[in-house]
Length: 112
Image (cartoon, rainbow, N blue to C red; front, side):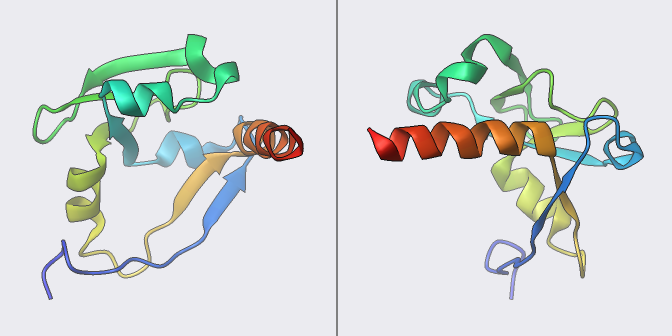
């Protein structure tokens, strides 16, 4: 099975904004910078978008500037999946503050 065919099942661990784990992150998985993807960014994060290029293939990507791990290389989704494809148990992290913001946004959106 190739890395592209491998299905990675793991949980996303929520960590505090000052967690040392964020400093140790190797990869920041980013979305390809397309009009469609940027249009899907929740309103509370639209002024926090950082732009760059995938460190492996050069594809234009975007990310939450205040949330991206400081030392992690930014990879597009496809390169990130190739990169972690050989890992037995990759650990996915997200900032708890961002997860809480997203849960609140989705809750309000469902109520409307």
